[in-house]
Amino acid sequence: MSLTRCLCCHYLYVLISNVNIR
Image (cartoon, rainbow, N blue to C red; front, side):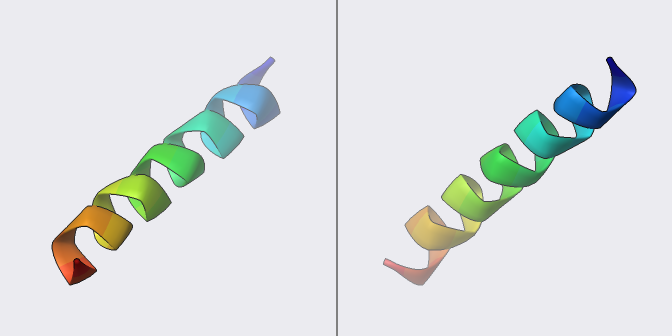
């Protein structure tokens, strides 16, 4: 589904942001 894919992308983006903040 497209929604699940979008969610996955969002989660990845959040993870990258977390790493950048740290």
